[in-house]
Amino acid sequence: MSSGNTRKILMLLNATFPDDIRVRKEANTLVQAGYQIHLLCRRRKEEDSNEELDGIRIHRIKAGISNLQLALRDIEISLSGSHTEFYNAALRIIESEQIDFIHIHDLPLTGTGLKLRQFHPHLKVVADLHENYPEGLKVWHQWKKNPIVRIKNHLFMGYKRWYQLENKFVKGADHIIAVVEEMKSRLIHDHNIPANKVTVVTNTEEQGFLDQKDNPGIYSEFGKFNVSYTGGIGPHRGVDTLIKAMSHLTDLKQVHLVISGYGSPQVMKYLDKLIGELNLHSKVSMRGKIPFGEFYSLMKYAGVNVIPHNKNGHTDHTVPHKLFQTMMAKGTLLVSNVAPLKRIVEECECGLVFEAGNELDLAEKIRLLINNEKLRNDLGQNGSTCATTKYSWENTSKELIQTYNSL
Image 1 (cartoon, helix red, strand yellow):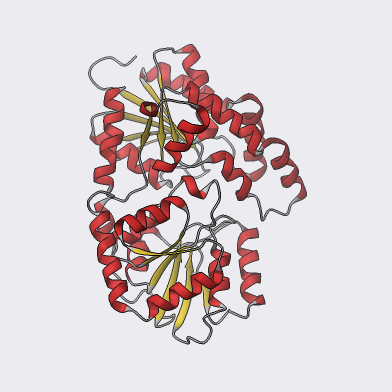
Image 2 (image 1 turned 180 degrees about the vertical axis):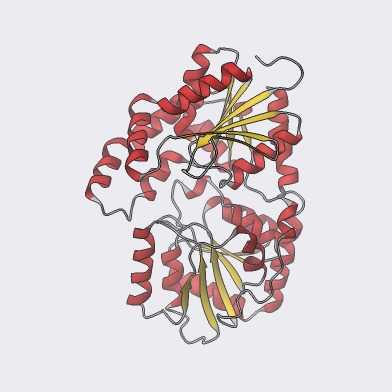
């Protein structure tokens, strides 16, 4: 246990840092609240093993780089519930730094945190569940074609196995952080845990997002009215539905779909093939990965920002950062009827909702927005009001600080 008044938190992140915006915001918030933050994460070849960034003490380890190496670690966690390299490195940090709390980002490393507590009973384990991981496994691999990968996922990354691990992990953790109210309700219902064991810390945005460069010409090379998708791309994101919707808008010459994001090579190949099959290369542009510093302008100057997520057990229990970023940028929103998206957009009156997977309904809603500039402006203003009050990180982060103060 740490000496003095400064409480020490060790975060475990099975990814690289500072790539994850949620992890960065939480760590920065806790540093500002007076906690000392150590963050253990994966290391890329060019990165230092140890670094301090904005008061966060980063410890990087070699814990898999290639897809094969990462797959072997997935199998290890699935079978044993723990990650050997993270466990060994965390144990050294706990003992040398006298850590008080272990904050685990997402489900897979939660078992590692619980194992560490067996040897250091004073530790408080906080499981920060960014998403519904067991349900996510049902959808993340839908477009995977490699037979070896498909066998590995079937044997070790199946829903039933990980749902059982989730049950064990959330019951063992001292406290749980859920990303949305829907996730909190599911955890309480599915695993019979008390409501006061779960705190909601959602993916709202910081006011500093408004300080990004304002670029009114960001869509100058595209259409007069640009339909925008921004962010990661995968089978659950519904980008294919959005592309199909454009096939019903070919009579509108001024409309163009701009996709600013990326996914795996298989995902991007599938979407490019779809664009070709629908003869939409003149109506759809896939720009690949875009620097985060351009997100504000992408969202502000789009005719409409679409979040077309498919509706399933995964998307109904998480929420993307881009929802709140678009609101903050006064961008017009058009979202699918995934539970958290629908709830927040309707509560804030900041966008329209279409039926997930329904390309015709999506196309119809786009037409409606094209023809009603006042509606677009009103929705954008409403979103800005919500994103700078109730749904701001400055407000959300209070829940995180209160949780640690109470522990």
